Length: 272
Picture 1 (spheres, rainbow, N blue to C red):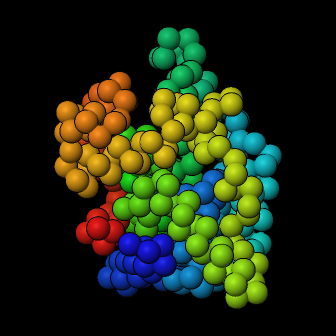
Picture 2: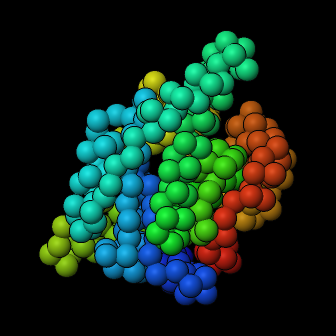
């Protein structure tokens, strides 16, 4: 499927879902990363900038460049973003949970607590103003369970939930190219395309390092397994590293419970 068609289907599915649910406005977290950037562009294309409410939620490990990228995206889209820092609420949770967690809130518990602080903020705005929370997750991360339950899995609808991460980048590049061809400013900052994807929940964290596999390889493996139904033997026969196959398939099986709690997304059949 062409990237133009993928983009159109995501935008149309978002519009249809909102129409059915009765929402006119959306709220979205702007992290400065690719997923939230592309979804923000889709929301503006679907609804108009006046109906899209972007929120920056810097935390203890947020980088200056990610804040800058999020602000540049907002300017390009004509959004008026607001900033709600999670640093103070996270410190409160850190202090309250330290004893119960063995003396210190650290590791995965600390990372996930930050993600849940962000979702508390977004859901408060959703409830306060009647805005629909839009999820920014993609299919690669959903298949790997690389998300936080009751954190970044929250939201009413996931426009790019049927796109693998490499497709997210390709669709985003297509959208920027369309803007440039039309003589307008490409909405997504170039730095978003070149920096390593990161949830920024710990120092120097990078998604590919955390998962132990690069997105290009992961997506090829997932597509072969999920879309074509190849098992471990067939995947190895196609040349995938046996250790990668074993680890990815084990993770896919183990994180099925997380996917059951992901928000709806455009029908996977759209992308075949």
